[in-house]
Length: 147
Image (cartoon, rainbow, N blue to C red; front, side, top):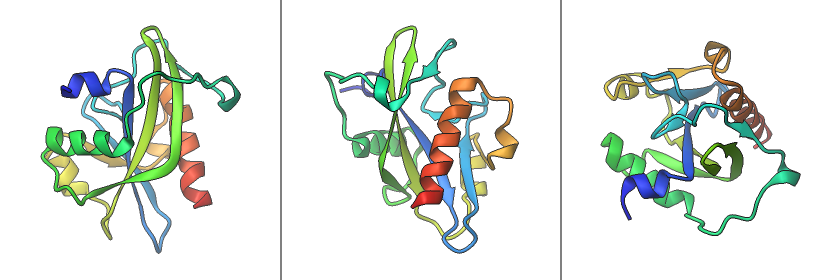
């Protein structure tokens, strides 16, 4: 399976949460998107849980994390899948499922992500992203604060 095939209907949010400070930061690509490896298509909109569609092909999020590690040349133990987060986004090309992976570091990986052309941003710093991304970020933030 090629990287593009696996991610055709899947994306990852990459985030950092400080265990002591509860600081939550999301990785943002140079193009502005918080979805990896590529942005959601224009005209995407999040589905509510009761609208979720049963998808035919399901990929375990760890496969996606492994592919992001390869694409971004990250160590295999830097990201951990956050269980229980899988949001569906309605796009012109079909349903995209978004999963979440958390950095397993004590401090935000600012330099590491900058060396990959990305930045770590807080939720307020991400205002102005497309509505589908903002809703994803809101749901991810709530999930992280609950857990």
